[in-house]
Structure formats: C-alpha cells, structure tokens
Length: 598
Image (tube, rainbow, N blue to C red):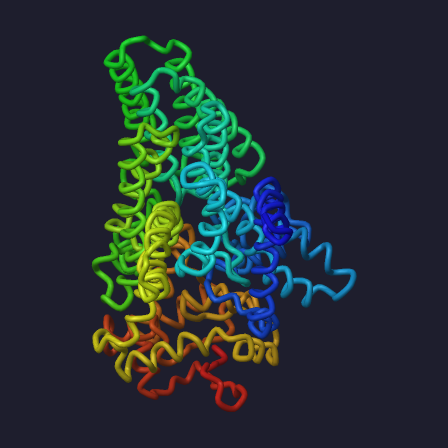
C-alpha cells in the first residue's frame, strides 16, 4: 500500500468514526450557501407563506411580554383577537436568535437574520436522522448519499427548511427523520424510545404528522406481534410516547388548548396518547409467548382506545377543525394542498410523486434482498418499506404529504443507487461506466422529473394564470406592504390571505387570516365582499375598519368575482366608485389599491 493509499484509508476511517461531525459540517456548509443565496429575500423579510408571517407575529408578542401560555393574537380580528391552535415550541429558536442578535444589529435586522437561519436548524437533525438510517440499513459509508439526496433531490422537502420558512413544518419533518432512524435501530429499547420521543415532540408542535406517528406505532406493535423479542422496543416506545406527550402538553399547550378541542394537543389527544402508551407498555411487559395471543391483545387494546375515543370525544369524530359547513364549503375544502395529489395538474403532481415511488421500489427491493439473505437489517428494511408505502398512500389523501413522502423515500432511493452503481462502475465498457452511472443516479434520485417537466407542452399557465400568479407575488411583497405605513395606524379590511402579511410588515391591524379558529371573521370578509355595498360598510364598521385594501387579480379576488357577480367587490373591481370610500395614493406601480372607509 502506497503512502497515498494509507492516507486515504486513514481519512476514510476518521470519517467513519466521526461521521456525525462531518454530517454537521455538510449541514453547516449547506446552511451558509442557503443563507448567502437567499440573502436578498432575507433582507426583504420574504416570509412567503401566511403561517410564516403569523409565526413571527407570535414570536414578537412573546418577546414583548405576552404570556407563555397565551397564544391569542390581537392584531387579527381586533379588538378581541383570536386564539391560534399552535404552541410556543417552534417559537423558541426564533426568539433565541433574535435575542442573541438584537444587541449587535437592532431588532429589525435581528428578525430578518433569525428568520433566515431558524428554518435551517432542524435540517441538521434531518441530516443526522437520515444519515443514521443509511448507516444502519445500507452501509456505514452510505450516509453522504442519503444527505445528498435530501439536500438536492427532495425538492418539496427542502423547501420546508429554506430560509424564511419559519413555521413548524421543518421541525416536524426533522422528528420524522428521527422516527425512521428509530424504526431502523437494531437496539430495540433505544429505537423505540427515539420513535416515541420524536412522535411526542411532533404532536406537541401540531397534529399534521399524527397519521405518521400512528403508523410508526403500528409498525412497532406489528414487530412485537411477530417477534416477542421486540418487547423492549415496545416498552421504550410506550414510555417515551406517553411521558413525552404529557410533558409536551404541560410545557407548551396554550390556555386555549386546555379545553376539549380536536385540532391540537389538547386533553383529547393527551388522554389518547397516555392511555395508548400505558396499554402498550402493559402488553409488552406481559409479553405473551403465543403470537396469536399477542395479536389478540393488541387488537383488544386498539379497540379499547377507539371505543373510548368515540364515547368520550364524539365531537372529534368529524373534521378536527370543527368549522361550520359554510366555512368548509367556501374555504377549507378549497385549500389546494389539502386535496389529493391526483387532483392537481400533471406539471405539479409529477415532480412530487416521482421520488416517493422510486423510494418505495427501492425500499421493497432492499427489504427482499435482506429477507432472502436473512440479513440483520431485515426487520429495519421491512419497517421502512411499510412506512414509505404509507407515505405514498398519504399523497392520495392530501398533497401536503409530499415533503414527508419525499424524505421517507431517501433510504429506498439511496439503496437503489448503492446497489446499481457498483454494477455500472464494474462494467468493462467505458460508456456504461460513465454514462450508465450518471443515468442510474439521475433515475434513482428522481432528478429527471423536475428537469423534464419544463419541456412538456402540457399544463402550461396561460396569460390569465400568469397575471394571477404575478399579483399573488407582488401584493404581499415588502415594498408594497411597507408603503401602507405612510398612513396612521388602523384596521385594514382586506383579503383573508393578506391579513397575516399586513400585520407583519405594516403598523396596521387586519380583520382576518386563513385560520379555522378565525372562522367567523373569514366568513365576515367573504360576505362583505360578496354582498351589497351597504353590507360591506356595516361589516367593516363592526370590525372597526378604517381602511379597505385590495389586490386586483390576486387569487382570492378572482373567487369573490366568480362566486358573487354584481357583489360589492365585483363592482369595485369594475371601477365603480362609492361615496363611503376615499381612494388613497400609494407609490407608483404599487399592485395594491387602498381606500379610507368614511
């Protein structure tokens, strides 16, 4: 062995021994690159989603002295405000960064930088979670491949960690990465505890990932039913789930979530998780020798939980949001990300589903290979294959499952590359070694989907769609919104989707935001824009609105015009003037129209 080969071998050994350090180094470099690339957007406080804006408002209120358990927002639906269903868990890193940076750069700049950095923090956990899974299931040297796939192939997933994406999705995805690592862990008690703790943290943040938490628990239970030696895994999971959920509720549940609501970690789901954890722990301790007896006991425990839920919490058998039929019909049922992936245009759906399907194929191929060879990682691969299948099926329910489905596809896609690339590199044909290897990586990573879709002559936006998309991007922009501060503070009557951005950028309050607990205000806005001018004026007066702010051609505006031809907004959009509205000037080329309500 030459000296060069010895140095390379020593380096490989060091990377293997200290792989977490190198994984975190990769995360740091990726984070620096992301912040540098998005610096102009960070400086313009480009919080692109309504939830990101509301998250910053929640952090601001906390830093201004609002109580830890008081999550009422007083800037929307004034003067009473409304209680949002979130918790403060995700607020902590944002608030911490602001407090750390504020003495050096001032509050506005500290907020901008914090919103740029905070979303990247949970990505470090995701790097470690998927890296661990790759080491456990594929090869101890496969972790860089898993990280590369997450960073560059999971296009929907990585957006949840992008600068300015400060809402809770990144943290829940990070917990999901730990869940899949726990399912892969050959050490039962440790793996079960990781899954239980990750599920508890995710539930403490929000219920969006509850189906995945339930599926992870079901997989662990099935492992124990099949093999009673998995009892330590179930016990570790049960204790971490029940205890972690109780701690999460005690530490983070707001005053508004202390009642029997169904849209957050309230006493409803606290009872379910604690009872489920207790029953699973008891069954695992009993650990009946017969497989059919274990199955029967597990089914009986599940029946007890379901029956108790039905009898004690019948209000939660319907939609967890518990909104009125009118609000569901006019708003909640029309949220695009809540619709199945097959209802979206091919141009949208194809890049979302490609990698999950590839990952599902890879997971089942790897599971079969492990089963045929009776490999030690067989149980882990079966668990991951089932979890990946579940994630793909979730896409048939809601498109918002795309980021989770892509991330859970990483182990299977990495396994395909790990299996196929040595075959192409070992070929005697140079073309196969070079182009075959590239083709394998492009195909197994799903990279071809996003690249090829731009050349397909289908589902291309027409001129009207381009106009609507342009308005949706320009109206909430920082420059457009900050211009509202030339007028004295007041209450803006505006579109529901503009509410969070108005209160974040300007010194004004707004009537409504797209949150189900703000449902009455949402209906007020819809009725006011869709009915007569007199009804608009009465509704605006009831909310104490001083100004009317509209954005022509914004998606929400097109809905009001289509549903209510001849209604107040339709008439306003056609140029009709009203005596009670005084047009107020805004900067040249502003996409907004502002009026004082007399």
